[in-house]
Image 1: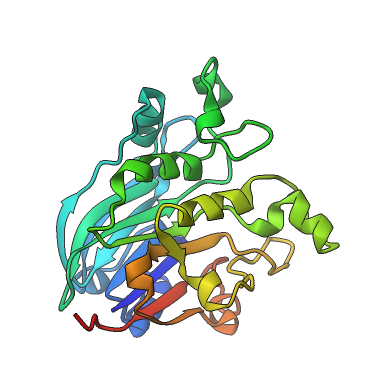
Image 2: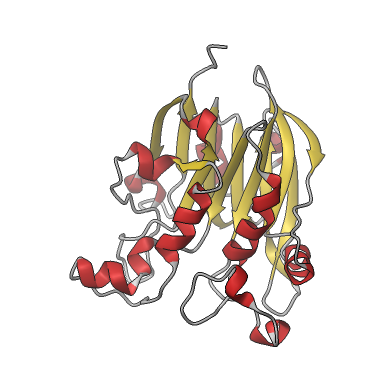
Amino acid sequence: MRVMTWNIHGANKSSSVWEFVLVLQPDIALLQEIGSSPEHFTKEFEAVCRPAIFKNGKPQRFNTGVFVKGKILEEITLSSSYEWINHELDFFKGNLVCCRVQPVNHSPVTVVSVYSPAWPINADRLEGVDVSQISTKTSGEVWCADVLWAGLQKAITNSETWVVGGDFNSSETFDVAWQEKNNRVFGIRSSGNAKMLQRMCALGLSECLRQYSAGIIVPTFKHRKGEIEHQIDHLFVSNGLYSQLGKCTVGDQAIVFGKSLSDHLPIIADFRASQS
């Protein structure tokens, strides 16, 4: 089974992005910033797509989507024990597309396509709320990725296979601690990014690209200044599925960046068939 996740930077139906994806032949594709897709592409997959949201609550011009060669069995609503988190999960329902799918010749998988935008939740909505329950930031900011984690806490079980992937807008290289340790200074200096990755793994998930690369950070994003330093895209899978991982790579920079397909590289993971 091949799984990929990719922020396609608003690609429309005439973009070469779609041919690139078809050549890769994913069984499951978790895509973000979808402008529009051509009919010959959508004929290959069943899909669930929803408009991502602006900070003001209005829909963006692009979608977040799950595509599968097989069947969409049902859409899933994530929830939390905290009502304010449930309100935020509903607010971000177009950024966190969750469903149960059945790829051809594979058992069902629960997947989430993630687009965590590059802005925190409006502080006005959180006035008087104890956000320390989920925030990883020393500033107390709460991001879509934090809300996702809160919604996954009750949802993920050992009896199901999960795939959670997308643009988290979170890289360990953003953390001040990482920059000071590695004597690097970037335009973004924040906190909590490493913690976000660690607590996702604490849910019983493995981060495919980072673990397959023996802990080395593999950049997935080309900053507008030209630097290619940060892994802000991530692909998490259940530990059981990770044990079947054969290979995890990113797309060719010369093609993706050289042909301006996107400012993100796709993450592509290949899993062997279960021996059970």
